[in-house]
Image (cartoon, rainbow, N blue to C red):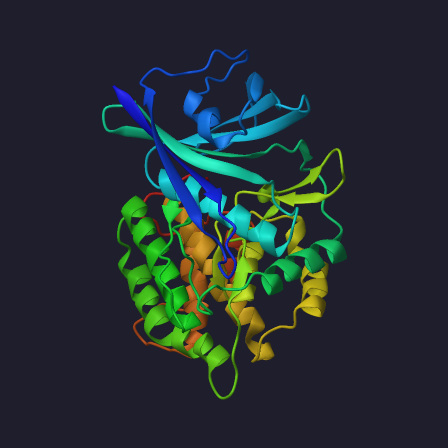
Amino acid sequence: MSSTLVTSRVVEQPGLHLTLDSVETDECDNAYANIPGNFKVHKAVFSAVLPPGIEVQEAMRSGVSAWAKTARLSTILKDGSERQYFLKCITGQGARALVEGAYHSAVTINQACPGLVPEPSGWGQYSIGPGEICYFYVCAFHDMRFNEAPDRRAFADTIAAMHKNGKSPTGMFGYPVKTVIGKMERTVTWEDSWAACFTNLLRDVIDYDNDTNGVWPELEAACNQLIDVVIPRLLGALQSDGRNITPALVHGDLWENNVGCDTSTGKIVVFDPGCTYAHNEMEFGTWRCRWTTYFRNSKFMLYYKRAYTASDPKEEWDDRNRLYSIHPYLTDSAGHRGSISRETAYNDMLFLCEKYGPLDSLEKYDPILYIYLVDGIRLPSSPNVSGAVLPVS
């Protein structure tokens, strides 16, 4: 049996933002390299993605991922210099979008803000059995610390630079290839309207959440009101009455677990991007979520707003931030059956619906419940799919 290898590399052409070139070769079914270490590496990984003449000295499991198997490759290049690479291998739902999207996102971020993400080498695929494909992504390896917050001003300035320098190739909202958050693929159609683009993204996670947890009629009613009334009003205001916003390159999943400090250089590194060209403020919806730590510190946002002024209407910034937080909350709920994130998203929807699109048939926002949910405490009366009290994820 043979396996098909597809790799992607940057092709520099004047006037083009990014072009990907695909190469196909055939490999033996059991073509794993004889490399010391505790991680099996398919020859496809270095036969076309890594530099010619490279010698892989060791492959060791490295890092923790909910969706993928990851390793550190210690190598010697053709010129005798040493270099380490990070390898991620994944199968199943969203696997291709994850690796292709991660590669494309890393290339795009490095064009906008050089050195912010590990330098990408390529991505590819190989067969691991009848009808089963393993997708892989290779980038530079960084030994990182994760127990310290970055300098607030420097980090805010860096993220603002990424948002400003990352120009949409079409001038529209969206992205040229599929990307993921977790393992869930995003809709990436191009839109002139940011409200329409965000609606696409929100519908994605609503569907994923329903697939995991089942339909909750009250939540469904709130989602419909949010999409039909709140989003057109709250996000539509960004592009009406003489106001406008420019699509910005956003990381897509920027929180503490995707930010580290390189132990050799002391520089901040962000990783696991799933980019889209969006309203820049969408980046910070996750910072409102209960699982964030130091990014909740208001100083980060204070410095960011000095580098990138809040959009008009400025007085609606917090409501937009609440709206943007619903997306990661539903994403978390979709990935963890019974998570309190679903209830948090629902309660936030009620808040926004009461303010921008009142509907008598909806329940009322509960500010006390919000405090419990954000602190990660489940109340005995909390609703869920089965009607039973589920453990906190």
